[in-house]
Picture (tube, rainbow, N blue to C red):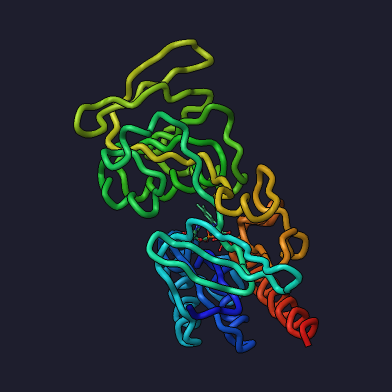
Length: 309
Ligand SMILES: Cc1cc2nc3c(=O)[nH]c(=O)nc-3n(C[C@H](O)[C@H](O)[C@H](O)COP(=O)(O)OP(=O)(O)OC[C@H]3O[C@@H](n4cnc5c(N)ncnc54)[C@H](O)[C@@H]3O)c2cc1C
């Protein structure tokens, strides 16, 4: 079995940048991506705060991916299900076995660039694929001229509602609290004529036989309940770190992986991007920490090599 210098788990901006730096340092790299290369970036309808670029997330993700492929990085389009550190007595470095559903891979170091997962809230569970979705950018297109609802209160919810207001006939933004998004986003939302904001409302259930037909909302202020006809329901509660995989390997908290300067508490493991606890969750910082994780991995591999001479 080929043993790679670095295994990068996650092909978002953090993982892609880590791959560029590692390949340019002449390290052998295997990168795993279970969904789409480009990660969350590939879903963003517009990105205007990444220096030197203004356009869709998909365009920027395509540029990053092309750069990684040009450097002949091995890309495995599968989810990593487990990472197992292997230590032979008295011998350094660790070797890591990386398991996907189909295969096992071997690497001397691991970079966790796994991003974050969207949080569901239960009501949508029976309607995924029947009108409920976690991704407005991915599925909004299917609701042209329809009535839809977005459920959430933060930046993701407001951003999704703005996005859908350009596609759907009408958008309800339902929020348990007052909106907690950036002011500029809220004022943009309020200028959309086809958006109705229902704060202090709870979506109690979704209704419909084969397909979603309506939602039952409870108004906390007036203590009353009503059904509103909708065809699409977008859950936008924000994101959660997908730390199931990581927590067996490194320390984590409720916001993600614990890593100082991208270095985790398991020797040979590094973390970058949104997956890191307390990180500023933006593309530019995901790229920056991806580069840093790669450099830390290179220095680690070098130190392991010299300790064996
Ligand atoms: C609605 C919205 C709008 C945003 N707008 C902006 C913006 O305008 N500007 C900006 O800078 N940022 C924006 N962001 C944030 C930005 O998208 C993220 O900060 C950035 O994508 C993080 O990059 P990442 O590589 O850490 O994670 P991600 O982009 O999330 O990539 C992680 C990748 O890892 C993969 N993965 C996870 N687990 C595994 C596994 N076990 N095996 C294999 N692959 C795995 C996932 O499939 C995913 O592709 C926005 C985010 C959202 C949700």
